[in-house]
Image 1 (spheres, helix red, strand yellow):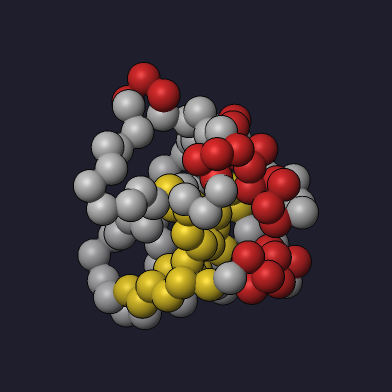
Image 2: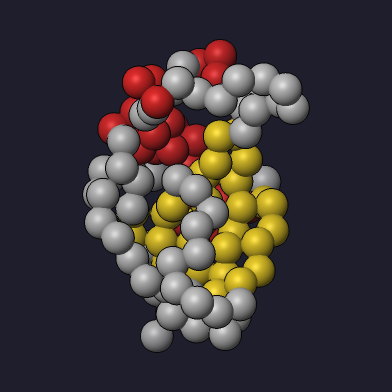
Length: 113
């Protein structure tokens, strides 16, 4: 049975082949509405931002997962323009409205083998 997760980065959780494609916020809302999924979002503010963006409650859960063949993950990833500084480690997990104004991407990560 396929498992579905929310991740805050596109990580390869086990050896294998994966596909990753960007999706729209509407596609992400459809994905979350389609069935059960488990959150692996580690920061409260990230969970709150996803709750607002997706329209469903997103829990904080710092667990580690291992994706199996056919598992999917909706990935919420902060992106920064080329040449801009990365987020200060002391500020990790703190999202501001300005930061979220277009500085994120949503993607679907699928383990294929």
